[in-house]
Amino acid sequence: MCYYFQVCSTESYQDKYLVFLLEHYKELKLPYSYPISLSFLASSVLMKKEAFLCFNEEDEIIGAFGYICGTAENQYEDTHVAQIQIVFIVDEYRRSRLFLESLQFLTQYIAQLSEPIIDFRFWVPVDLRLHKLLSKIAERKNTWETVQGVIDEYHASFSEWQTYVLKFRQEVYFPS
Image (cartoon, rainbow, N blue to C red; front, side, top):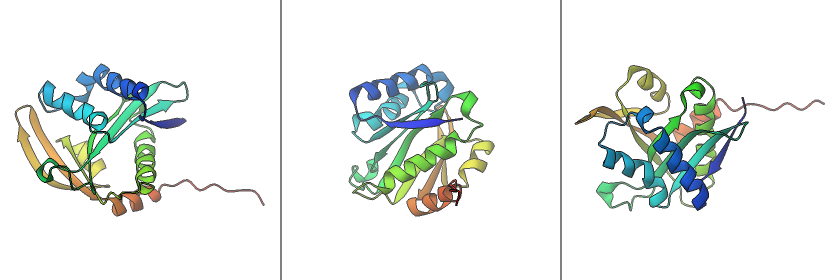
């Protein structure tokens, strides 16, 4: 399967990003109230950080992810910390290489930024399958109980994330 990624740097792509996530709102199963969930979904666009769309070979949107820089406790001045706000891949593509390729794309994108990102943070609903996957790229730091469910908080350093995704880099061989 072939995929490609688009940075949502124009209003048109930002609209597609938000519409796609809202169309899949129920599938996201976010453990927050709707207003808080909406703020997470839109924050990558509203805070003028990065939002990305994933497309398949038929130019259909099959995934989206986004992050913001900084943390609320530091008034978003600690811009070396990226908080991943949302990652969503439609069900039929979840058992493909798309998640790995998304990580590779994000890592390559961040590596070329003028302001370095040193750490990642993200929160996910407690799920043993997710923990097995995510423990390969991050460390669970805390578990939080919310009104809508229990979530795990993960942290990862950019350098460890980069090392992990580079293990899966496909080599290209040229005939001699």
